[in-house]
Image 1 (spheres, helix red, strand yellow):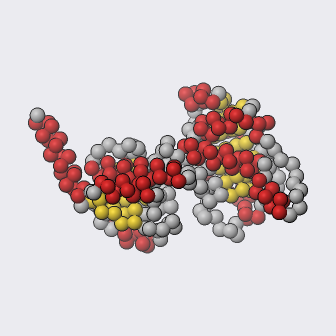
Image 2 (tube, rainbow, N blue to C red):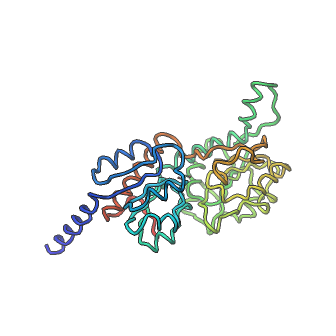
Image 3 (spheres, rainbow, N blue to C red):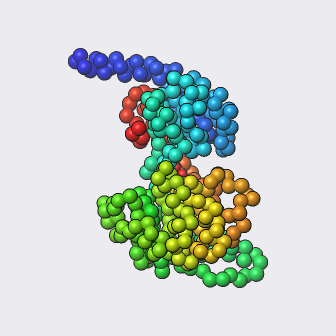
Length: 335
Ligand SMILES: O=CC(=O)O
């Protein structure tokens, strides 16, 4: 009885605090997520109401005194931003599965809770990865141009003859499941250690990074960007790949050394690359990678379907509200 009264009291304190919770939303996030915030009746939120990233100076101004921040991956949440927000900031909820834009150390130091949006985008990312893989290997971008000009194109590769290689499993399981019907001969992967629970789902074999590069026909990168994975796709990796190999990246641009990738593509060290992510984003149109016919570049759209982005916005909004209420979030990063 006593315990439940204490629990009820602490809940009502948290709820009362929420009455006045101020939140800044850094992007015009999809409508379902905004509806969750509106319907809660517990937050006053201000929104950067465009599809473009909020300018840094504006962001630093707008976060002053907020209790919660709902952001996307273009916002660097670092000491400067957290100082600008002040001690009232309790929750940062990012509408992304990746969190390399968040300074976790600073957040932890200040006791700020962090929500993110894994799982809900897995299908969309896997689908886009397969689309990019086929588009790059079958040279579809060049082909649409050819259709309008000479109606002539060199050799095309087909997916089923190949072995597909993944560093890091995770989302790659969803990609492999979609590739199975293409009669792929073999899936292999590397990671810091074997992950049999996932590998068994797609019958994938664990190999070293070197073997991965050497045997690779398609190499798709699905790992998170961390200090350990920064620049792992570099001259060393590309020099071990076959000339017929295709490199696909739908994770983060930072895992690739782009100068080395350019060199590998321009010299025929590898056959092609499909990139949904680059450094920086957007990649300047004057960037050398844009001059290459064998490089297909997309504007980071892997999760960009209406359904998926709506689901991400709902999860991000619910994470934010739960954090503000002092309740467990559906998807919270353990700091
Ligand atoms: O790249 C997309 C994400 O992290 O959600």
